[in-house]
Length: 243
Ligand code: MN
Image (cartoon, rainbow, N blue to C red):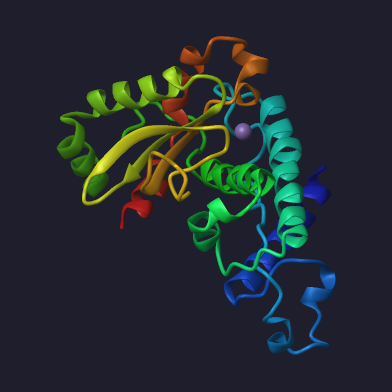
């Protein structure tokens, strides 16, 4: 498994480099130097799945290894396959995730659900790290949270309520709206970047409340999953999104 994962990370890193220069991630042929990069400029944007920034067991005991493996390698991978299929089938020609979500009303339900699925999970993985005791934000982020919500405890309570009360499947978010931090939730795989979303803003923090995110360990106890999740929040990542 170690070799496979290392190879995957290597491929992921190569894919990242290519995405940065505007070349979509397709197959190994895209890595070849035989064709000049300019020849591929008309190939539409495609989504990619980031390499997991830690091991499947890194978030134990908060999120169990089996949940992480299935969530990343099955659920997230399926969203990726499906959205890129939709991009080809619908001849979607966007330049970035941002423009894709801005124009999402023009595309199919398959493109919307699976494009959201890829983006949301890429974001979610980065919102987490190994469990820490007294895991709190600091610096400008802590100040911004205090200013918007009165205290960290108020923020935590409001975010937890948004996560627990989202009916069915969806996501809880902390976003930057117009000069203010806001808490909200979205159904299914919608996100605050989508033109069709009632709740909009720049994502800072996301929590997946689909049952597939917690059912193996927590069964029906979503509130317990949410309460425990705070110790794996990667506040450094959240701070970086605030800029
Ligand atoms: Mn999920």
